[in-house]
Image (cartoon, rainbow, N blue to C red; front, side, top):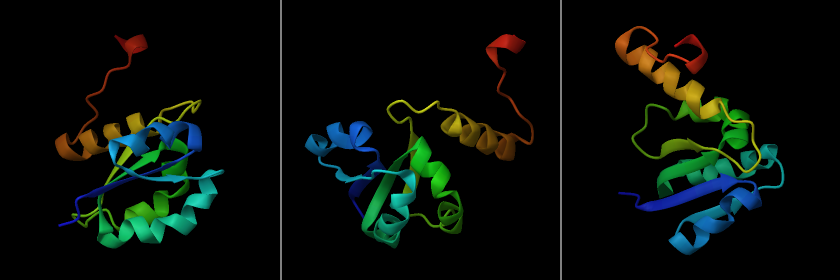
Length: 109
């Protein structure tokens, strides 16, 4: 079983993860992650964290491995990113699981 953990994102967002033992893959631009993706998606890593901009860039590639048990792909906010990708992914997963959207936005409450 793959026990290694990888993280891909801008250098500011991922720098602090190296001392924790994660394999850190800093990219200058989200598009640069396309070159790294085959290695981390090969099954050598059990978990792959992606910053939101990288996740958005790799969405099609991630979809092709969604049914595989390894790697588990998780979205994290990046430094200075506007956010929203992780929340949208969670909302879609909940909607698929229960058949309806259950998230209520603060402005709707």
